[in-house]
Length: 498
Image 1 (cartoon, rainbow, N blue to C red):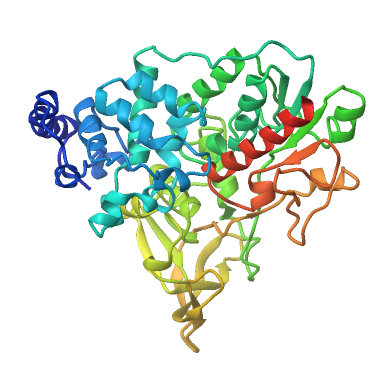
Image 2: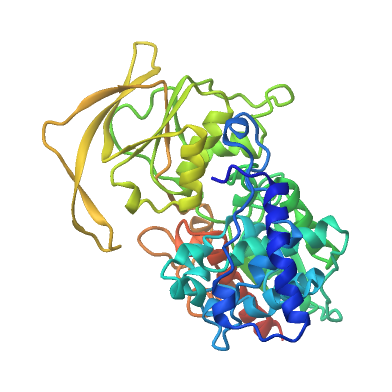
């Protein structure tokens, strides 16, 4: 974490940028060596001591000089390896080139050619495992952590456009008279809606909750992704003519077959996510004080339990919280528990930090805020009192064995290593499975043994005119991977409707 303020980082960047731009303006040739010598720009963040007590955004975003200086690090590779690493194929060198020129509106427009949610993706996508992992700069410096900060630049362009009132509505072709139904308003559904609406088809999104945004609203905390940003990007869809019906549970309110056969929709996209949480399967999971991360975060995010003075949502008041898991959801739950007033928050993970699937930045932020990590540990039992309240965990110690199918070393129990860990709250963040409602109410829809919908390369399901994508197909994945599936599904739907 940087100890420098946004203003200090911006002053330093401006001092380095000015002579660099002067050299360019004077016709001096800028070599790759010159660009590799530019220091990677730090992301300004809230002070760790202050942010653990509020839900305001932690990462504050680049200033203009920082953004332009970071953009100048890009080599503009002709083979565009970064684009190949992007699930929605954002034209990365092109939008970065516009930031180099200082044309931030043009940069935002380039991004939106393939991604209508740049302010979201710039904040929550794991760029270090995707576009930035392929960046020539990071590879040249033998440190992927020093790759061009593509995600931060994407966020900058989107934020600049919004804060300066320059957001424009994407062009929509004349109406075709064809209709498409989108089930779920998460990242996959919103992406399909945008791409299908652009072609002039009527699009209606059906959302089971009272608010749109899916996991971006109920799952990802305010301090990582402000909900106002999600709402503004949803509002842009409405300006394109997309209609949204909330509190509409497809499978109960209406079935897929009724949408197709009675309501006149030419295609249906299923993007309902994977909302059925996994649990430990150990004794004691029924004690009061045990939560799935889904429920915990939904109460805190969607229902704003963190704002106790203005929210009627009941929330368990905790003293010592344990979070079981090592992914991004586990980090979100642990950091939210701090903000809800827990005295201590511990993450229990059965491997080491090197094997954690969570983004390194999120793990760093959690540690800075005071979350304690207990590695090579896993619960074998949840303990409780005669009132049915959690009193602790029985933990087992582990050591790492041979790599498993994912390439991570498998955890192996150390015999006789059990001990008791005192706590009053257990949050289980072990991923999600598919909610069976839609598959059970839709005859002929093929799913795999985990309940995930089976699709072909164009995201078509076993049913005619029915497509699917996102977590209901992938299992719990990332926002950008869901959007990638949404783009493929939209292309198939547009071809079918044409």
